[in-house]
Length: 107
Image (cartoon, rainbow, N blue to C red; front, side, top):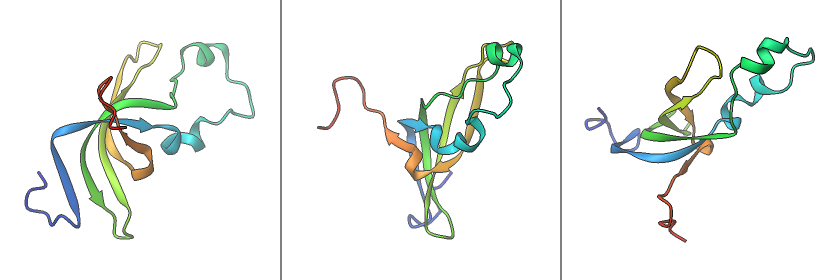
């Protein structure tokens, strides 16, 4: 997908790299407690946004302003009938950290 794009603009990963995605860095403005308490149904079955989730990094893409954005995939689970929601989108570089297999951390 990114083979013909200059490395200063995009860096693809094939296969994708296992990463942690800090959802608090992405969704913080929307998951702060509401001033009004939600109804019990929302409290019990509403979407839970965890602080971080496991995912995969497909590529790094460069914004015009110079920042790197990670093209990632991950899932968020729901307690309701919605089930698991699969996501694939761009996130800030600060939201992505490498996820090493257990016992294989580099340090």
